[in-house]
Image (cartoon, rainbow, N blue to C red; front, top):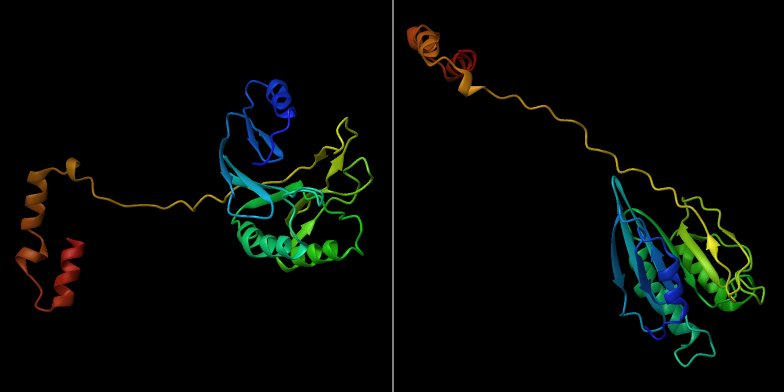
Length: 229
């Protein structure tokens, strides 16, 4: 993590007590204590910061992947080619294979509102190749550019919205519908209540069964007599 801005303290102080706050690069997560969350910092990606949170709901899971890309003016900025390689080979190849509902969000510091930009077109093509869709179609920065993105599987319907903010970046709101994991079908089991057997009656019945009085000669008939006695 390169830098933790002072407003992290603000998030911790304004979050309700029953909503713990987890900090990650460029991202805060607040969630109800009734949910169980796991956090992972993806530190092996050299060109940008990435983290993920997985919320374990009563009958489902949902993951949020967060990305922070340094601006081109930053000392940590890398070439477009290096960024695209890391995004493709390291991050998306992992995130896009998540077996449950997920979203990818964060500050990409790339003008996604300019489709003629070479890097923008390359990113949109890369997302399409992973069957992913970028949903934000409005400015998220006070310079009237779309820098903060919400990405999901193409078969997931999202409708992000935003509000004005005192910060240079605007908050982006969206809702992710998480389907319940189907419960396995019920199974039935049969068993013998051995402890309820009257031993004397059992021995008496067995003594007069065909297995004792007239045992069959063939194996198949002997097996049938055994199963029906």
